[in-house]
Length: 170
Image (tube, rainbow, N blue to C red):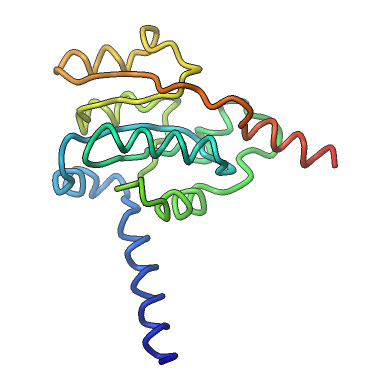
């Protein structure tokens, strides 16, 4: 019995790592996903309830959800605060891949995922409600090829930055 549970656990880990995709094989991996493809991005440094709800809502808009994470260097350029991100990009990708709502996880090193979006052409671009979609260059790109771009309602009371401040203050 112990051997069977070990095999099952190993298979589960393999399935998680299969959801993490380096840019070199991204096009092929995206081509295998069912459409419509929903795309979102962010740092997702310390995953919390607001993130999980947001990602579940994003996935409900389509058949697949691709989450693009800021690399550590890209996240640092966002000015989230000293020592951020707390979790490195590989760890953040692994946690993101463990979510049932996530179909595929990748990274981008630029300040915005504009190049990535242009490359993969998702059907739906989703951001949190704290973004003005009309001001994002990504919105114009997605709409130009017939896709949709929308902001999901922001989940009040949940913020990684606030959580980090709380932890650091004791």
